[in-house]
Image (cartoon, rainbow, N blue to C red; front, side, top):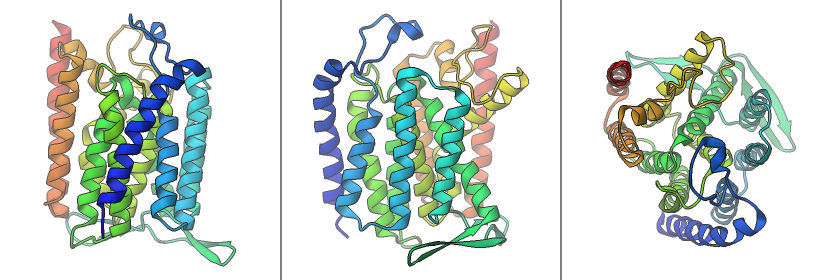
Length: 351
């Protein structure tokens, strides 16, 4: 299959769209509010996520036939982008954002996107395809599996929030999406998976992210916003499912961000805060997210980006060559490295 045209189309169209947005967004008043975060720079175009969604819709309609799963992805993505766009402008309640994320994840399950089995690293499979019931959409029958549905909803909501919380430094979300999309592309064209359509979709996502990254990398010329970071999170979560249910591969790519998200959730619960309520710092002005703790450690924004990119790329590439058990031990290593890094950052903060 020819992957050049979809990839180059996504890359060029994104660059052209952003160049236009840099001129048009200020005239429409679509600018960020740097003073809200204590930043002393001029306001820049925001949010770029609305562009990313429109480009993705255009390219998928151009290169793919409409299927129930694809239509569901576009509708769910549209809902997520719309509510995030409104939130970017008017700060909606955190519970409402979480409700919409769960709703979008349920839409994915209803249209047939889900994980039926999880490979056991020590042999066999964990079946999630039990307790079935059926939904009819015209001539199409969709099988809903209760355990699979619950796991899929949890997976999508986790990755959507993981990518959103990564957006603390410009260039983080778009850079990791590029790495994740390319990894899933190479996985999908491998002989063991061999899914050309999924590979094309992953390449489109990667090239959209790369085109936007050129303008998003610190210091940014345009801000991706929650609409873009959450949409990229949805795409990566769904692509991992499409790619033969390669959840372990996606976990390796996003291992550090996922563990950071889990840490933040546990930290907020421990501090008796709502885990879905945002906030870069706690009430003692201590950084909560890993990338902010790295900034407090003394690294620059670009150095933090470089470290996170390197770690995600290294483990993502390893996932292409490791078997199920190898991926399991790689995930264990990620846990260990995250713990060691956290100890180092914590020790520095106490000095």
